[in-house]
Length: 160
Image 1: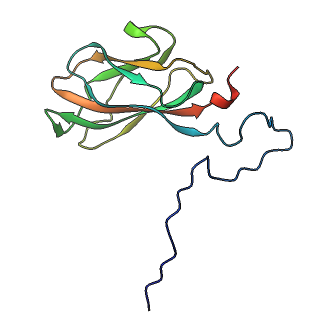
Image 2 (image 1 turned 90 degrees about the vertical axis):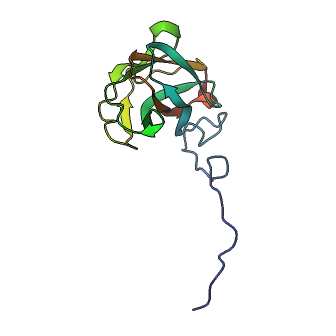
Image 3 (image 1 turned 90 degrees about the horizontal axis):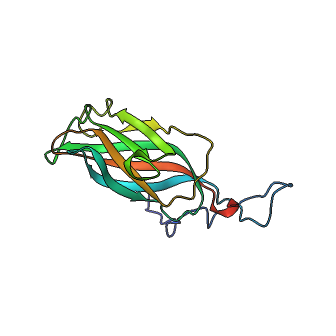
């Protein structure tokens, strides 16, 4: 059977995807933009000392609601491994300032190399305009790092 070229690959994003607006939709706000997406990422967050260790910036959103935090790629001394004894929090201000996005939680399920875990956010159904989040290490683990990803809803089109 001959090889068939189906044409160039297509990238479909909310900006290129056709979206049907409900009959009672607010047509002053772009449709399809309040989607669930990656809002912030911090790579190789150092877990070796307690306190605020990284400021994680929000990606292209002026008004957002957090839903899920994922930690992945745990490493000790540069080698994939267990970071189960470490604990982190994600806050909207320095030194644990409220409101807290995720209270201090152990990374207990990051007990194997290359494992990833999901941490439910502490506050649900709240939208923020804060552009920087602080990752605070509550329990340190020497020479360890982890990637932290924040997923949620971009509500910029509906900002008050």
